[in-house]
Length: 173
Image (cartoon, rainbow, N blue to C red; front, side, top):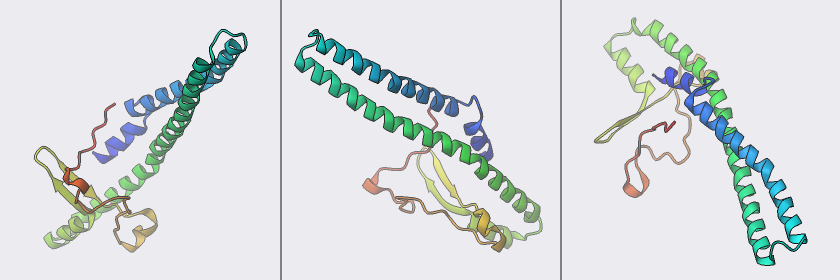
């Protein structure tokens, strides 16, 4: 399931990738149009066609829009880079699963339980969904056989600040 989701997100033509690329293209196009719009505004002002208050208001709006679009374009580019990075993660997860699959049959019940305890980080149950967090060993630590969870910014170990339950990931695309 995880591998399918990773593949789906990074595929050319996927709703996630396509949506990000389309939004980035729109933001980039608008960023290219704003300077021309500013030039036309200044030209209209110098010809006396646009009053001072309207000129200031519109120019301020364009500057703010440009700043928001620049930040959004950077964010979209970062998201697209993360999708591409998912390819390496996918290969690592697949290698780990294959390694585990090869050895799981030779384990007794206690050994299987230990593997589950090592790989399972957290399970959060809610009335309408369950969140299961797993740990995949990072490539550089894999030979030692140690499993570790990557640090998560703001992770409170299942406790939710403010008392509201966490929501499951739902891809809106």
